[in-house]
Amino acid sequence: MATNERTTSPGTFSDGLVAGIVTEARYVVGDSVVMAWRNLLKYRRSPELLLFSTVSPVMFVLLFVYVFGGAISTGPISYTDFILVGILVQTTLFGSTQTGIGLAEDLQKGMVDRYRSMPMARSAVLAGRILADTIRNVFVVYLMIGVGMAIGFRFHGGFWPGFWVPFLVVGFGIAFSWVAAVIGASVRNVETANSVGFVYIFPLTFMSSAFVPVETMPDWLRPIAEHNPITRAVDAGRAMAQGGPLVDDVLLTMAWIAGITLVCAPWAIWQYRRVS
Amino acid sequence: MSANGEAIAVHDVCKSFGSVHALIDVDLEVQRGTVTGLLGPNGAGKTTLVKILTTLLKPTSGRASVLGFDVQRQARQLRNVIGLAGQSTAIDELLTGRENLEMVGRLYHLGGKVAKHRADELLDRFSLVESADRQSKEYSGGMRRRLDLAASLVSTPQVLFLDEPTSGLDPRSRLDLWAVIMELVREGTTVLLTTQYLEEADRLADQIAVIDHGAVIARGTASELKKRAGSEFIMVRVLEKGMLPQAANVLLRFSEEEPQLDEHENTATISVANGSSLLVEVVRALDAENVVISDLGLRQPTLDDVFLALTGRTAEDAATSREGESVDGD
Image 1 (cartoon, rainbow over the protein chains, first blue to last red):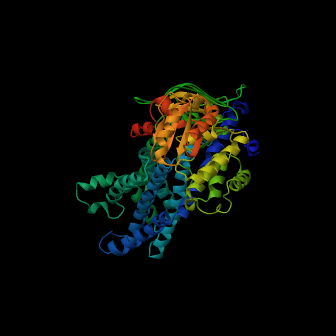
Image 2: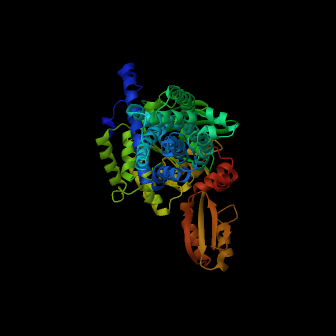
Image 3: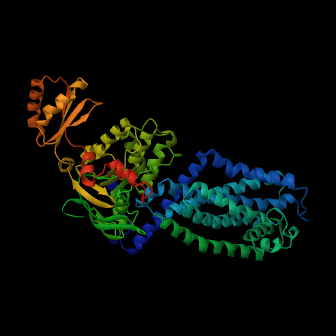
């Protein structure tokens, strides 16, 4: 019988506290990997999601470079070099909304009821979701850098700073995945999660240094853009890729990542747990 | 584990959502290896009770346990021994049938090899082998339900919870699913199922608890409940409508109440205390009066009659009157 081969579940105190914690940790990791595998498989099987996460970012790179590239002056660096990091950040943020949409879908369709009736780690539903979206973001970021390099993007800031750009961008995306998770667990409806995502990501990315230099914005908008965490992340990434002073921006970006995660991760977990 | 053979024990369980009382002092005992049917209209509280027993909801007060594991204090152990097939089929449409089952196996920590093997077993058992590697979004409604039920059996649970297992299925798929459930019971699985179909409870359940407005209002075997609805019925169908009054006159001799006449169906029905012994006499009397009959029957009260006797309204009326105030979606 299959039942007999099952590992003892944690919480039976016979195997001791330490062993219990180790088993529990193994379950959290193992179950998260299973959930991530499932979510990635769904990306592969669903053409519109695949299109959304790969073709449209590439299209964005091409459109911005060729349509706006001639009209926007970005000083000493070329518009291609300027825009690519901006689009990397924007794409990762749009990708992060999938975390909320996927979570809302599972809640809406009753998948979570089954998961919660099983002895799996409860946190694995959220963690697996975020892990899958992170893996997808890594893939998309490298794809876009590849496309960018094909049309003239170059790293001018040296190897190591450039090497860390994808990590910064993806890390920033993870923080926003938690924001989306809060939304998904609260609204529990795919359509709502989708539209709420657009409502905050669009203004946030456009009122930042992602597409145009902040100095070109009107006086009332400039302070908003300056304090926008996306401006910090984009400026940090840009300095890493193209050279220039970067310590302040990198530290600020990391502070934003930590701050958003510290607030939104517990909040998302709490929202998810009160589902019933 | 409880020694006395109880698989499920519920004592004084109440559940409130704000000011709405979804369950009021519910007591329920389910013996191992038996099937218990929770029968009730929409919004009666059936799903709430299943959610409490499967650790999805916490009771507001009272105690509940499955195989001796307390739903609140020993939730993790409890989850190891139960299976749940909820109202909405919890399967991933973009995954194949096989992938769905393997994923559930891995989440039960069966290990990759065992999970694969178990998936194969269940696909075979539920006649899904041919479509095992197709995405389950291509499955028919009946196939989805079978896959969902298969997923709830991956860990070979000792106690199985089925929340309206056949709602929305065509009659043929319903019969198929009933056969599968009966087979599980023969193998010793304890089953708690909720249903709005009186026929389903009659067919599958050893014990029925009737739930209305969050409270258990009656319990017993199907035949015990039927007795509470009163006596049996003798139904006579005449060949021509003209003979109906004559038939009614004959029937009047056997009953204190007026026969019920149905002029569309050409039937006359009386309720009697001991139908089987009277049936022959009824035929003789009708024959003596030259009433030609096309059909004659002794009818046990249905569970619909039971619901009417218990609540003063039919199950359908009860469901309609509670629409819009459903708190748990059942």
